Length: 142
Image (cartoon, rainbow, N blue to C red; front, side, top):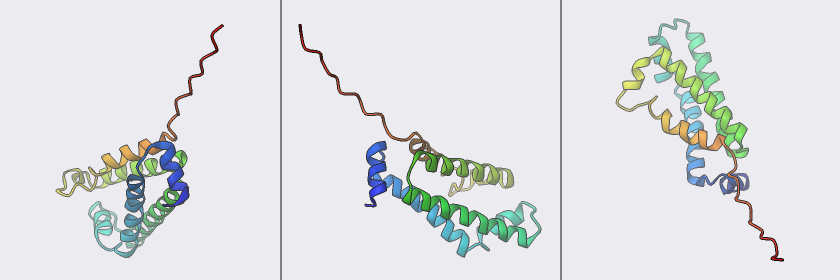
């Protein structure tokens, strides 16, 4: 396990498998968006009324780059600020998708609904290290 991740997980109590699962979501989203940008993403933007193919492609590539940066940031620099940036980015993208295609909330595979448990994990990470209970020191009896 990567040492920064090991330290982060020890400090937060987050299982490493959960941390790596969140990293995988961001990196795989970037990969799929970059290499299949003419699939679902472009169709979503076209259905929402965005006529410019250049704008659609630019938004898809920008989103893929953003996802890759977040995934790499979480992988190599896990921290409260990094988790907060990821949470904010996920909320912005969820809001944008909701405005463009509110029906995605009712899609059988739940592409937006899945963001709720992801948000919970990102919130956990954004809270940072768990405070360790202070050792109780008793004063000597007099």
